Image (cartoon, rainbow, N blue to C red; front, side):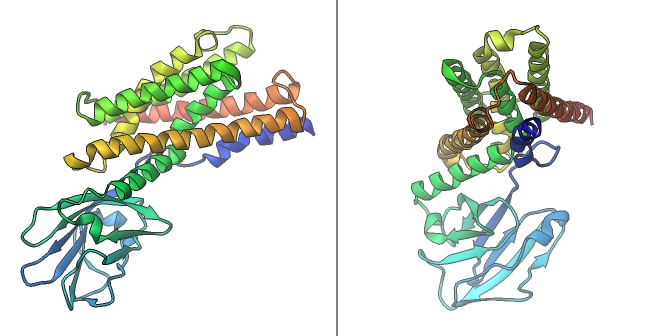
Length: 338
């Protein structure tokens, strides 16, 4: 009974983190809202045909109405909504986008003014466009900080490869000063490369980076298996060194995802800071969740790390992670040459 409980509890984080076997992308698309010379407004989502069913009819302010098809005119790489309002859109107006995407990088082109580009994140099942956030010269610091923080949290919690690397680290160190050192080293390392890549000091193709991230997970799994067989490697001697080295790779992966949304230059410092904050928050949520499961095993079911039940559960999880990461490694390595 204890063995079954151990296996179920140890596997729980993996099941919670379950997702696609492909590298995680943010699901953020470019869009623009343009005030035309004739007083009408054109709202355009620039997505390929396969994603167009996710672009549903926006909810406009009460004094506005659609011209033409309210479901939008669908082109090869865009869905266009045209609407008019009894009076011009102003600060305080809001447009609700029930689009089934994680967010949009929205550019608003006010008549006679410079374009303003901001990131709009998903809130529940919709995105809310507060037009005050898009006034020329408006920094929108608080709104931007919230949106990029949430984007970072969502990215790490939906990024199965990053979570599995952290999970494998927690099989190496679970308590004490070594745990603090290891998680801190991983955090510092991926913050360094995230910053350097986002600011343009490093430019690395995404395919080799994603393959190397998969390799980092395979490496940790092999190290854990060798430790159980009495042959501990460098990871168990200097876990913070390994965490730092591979953290540099994972930071490049984070940067690639952030770059995919097409940040406008004025937004880069804000996005970099709070996206990283969000990643750290999400990472801590995951770490505490896993440690809570391990504590439940240790103090609730009274299963120690050296017990038969724990070792059996750990072996199943580690081999499962290793097989999945090996598949990613092969898939992503092939992608380098395609």
